[in-house]
Length: 362
Image (cartoon, rainbow, N blue to C red):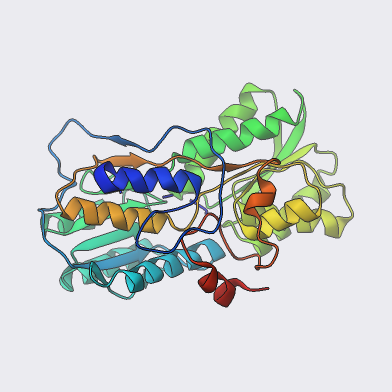
């Protein structure tokens, strides 16, 4: 998941505003703030020819979204953010119906091929696999289509990659947890999806920190960043390892599952990092948890779309665009949490209050 994610000219302004509250677009004013010590968004240009760039073209642009799956609340909000932006910017974009590959790479390749055949000008991809989509991405770019992947990015040199540094996400969460522990302590780890680029990179960053600080992971498993899956896994791991001192979690819904498992087992709530889901922030506040959270908001799809638009207008952001990683601390929790809205909302967001009340009311 939980797997962030224009640039130069208008793009840099968007990325910078995202680090604070979201996107500065034609969309209404964002509804929340975050704090971050990260540097502004940066672009990295590969030394080779700009294979990731489609030829400049005047708008409006036909835009397609290829999502590897939509079965958790974060991915569902990606679709909402995409559709809302499309509805508010009809002079610039016309959007095809988003595609859901149901975690199947062959299906995602087929859906991207269909978007090529439908004459898309920009294809946005949240990838199911880091390399398996490279051939179809090359086909799209060589057909004159601008490809931008985000969140779970690929290794293709024919796409612009937009997102947060996922290894850094894992590193920062683990560093916070280590600050709450002492050498020799034991933890469990609630991972994402083995083989998923975001999950693997976060795990790599976190595991390196734990190893360097003599923290032992006594049990772990995949949660798909899903609360129910995480609760089941955490219950099993906590029952087998009742003497641990902390829990590492890759994302907010996984953290919610861990909290529910601890409460069900009648255990003390252990230190655990989370992500900027409203459900996790509400639980953090209500239970007076010891925690820290990063934000990798679904509005990343809007950053990716705006990057694609800028590229079609002739602005080359480079092969990779790294966005800042917003963080939420005990001091900034109150200004980020929305007690009047349900657990499924992810923050920050560019969606207006009226939309949030209609779609995320308790």
